[in-house]
Length: 325
Length: 255
Ligand SMILES: Nc1ncnc2c1ncn2[C@@H]1O[C@H](COP(=O)(O)OP(=O)(O)OP(=O)(O)O)[C@@H](O)[C@H]1O
Ligand SMILES: [Mg+2]
Image (cartoon, rainbow over all chains, first blue to last red; front, side, top):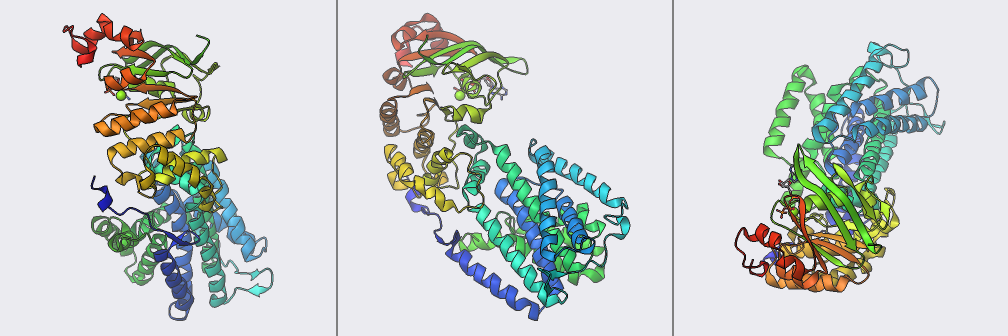
């Protein structure tokens, strides 16, 4: 057998489930995020972190579970509306707002996920899309809650624990960075948990997992709910950052963008969603003057990505360096 | 018949009108090794899929340890102690050999839904997993990604993973197919070793393995039971010789 010539051992864990290379990457990420607000526009950076949280959830579904959802904006948008409503109308603290946004995303995700996971592949994707249309339809109605076409505006950022004002961008940046890091470590923990091991086994060979007594639908449902919760968290945080929630946030384009972020960054990698979010948000900022052409340019980049780096930027980098990132 | 661990009555499965399995009865005796043989396309794998509920039977009933299991989900069948392997090697390719066995052992924890805990908690099964790998001769490959193992070793890993659930009834679909002679001998020795306290139902094409191991044999052809009994009885049965050799009556041993 020639198998002895192949790499035998998987990468060893260094600390808290991170391999050596991942720990270095984490230190790099942390340094960058701490220094970045002094050299770049903080609101831009905060939006990157919001979308990175959103994309990390989508990546749990797409990359780690093998489920493509085309309706993630439903959870993101509803998280944003509820989070915005909580701080603006209920005068709750920002942390309570994002907690409620998270719960909203997770609750809707639990119901929709329960309906969707009974189907496979493209049928699953279509059901998630159809269910998201319901939410979209609800948001368009000017019920006084979502504000319909006007959306929700002038959402205050409030004070953490009723004391520390998040009014300045830098203060909110610290808050957003902490939330992002918690979400990042949480996702990493889910992947490297006993649950994550079963999910991996199911993705590798679903029938074999069933024959060992595991029921895949239960795991897919939990992952779906977690991904929707992260989407709700991201939406609520973004509502604080931008002061507004609009119909775009629950729209199909947003569902498409988060899939794009995962693919561009690197599906099934830990750092891919952040890189994907940074690239796509940067494009939206710097190509804003091209107005409608942004979508076309995004489409071209997407096609180029699929053709040139199938594994996404982090995925290709990891493959080149023979590391897990 | 009271010592049957598994009984099937009138088991049938149609695929769009084509009857792959038709009116099959089984009685698998407790602690026996029962071989299911028959030409390609006879319906052996389909029977496995029915017995483990990976397919829903068109008709028929099944009882495992006296209880009706016809309506159970496949994962529930496994939980009751009736665990199958697959004809096409089924390992978790991007997990190490040790992790493959461990994920089966971890069933003892239940569903492993704790996504907030570190996977280190699974290390409690490392010793047990390693012992199972030793049993199947994979002790040097514990840290190898399963996808990189040779074919024979993948089959051995599957058996180790199946044994990790400590099943009372094992269903092995062609455990030695495509193996080198040395690998076949190792698997036969392994089956002899693990049979204590267990019942084994196996599909097997290698007739020397069948004759050496099995207490009883059921011959399937075109979805029906052609003959059942011990090796001597079955191999002399004219219908079996006919099915295997057409009109040439030179005996099963020469196949
Ligand atoms: N899902 C399916 N849909 C349609 N036909 C099927 C399906 N599964 C099996 N069959 C057919 O049923 C018959 C029995 O197949 P089965 O796989 O059970 O045979 P087998 O005895 O295991 O054969 P082999 O020795 O080649 O493994 C074959 O004719 C096969 O083509
Ligand atoms: Mg078969």
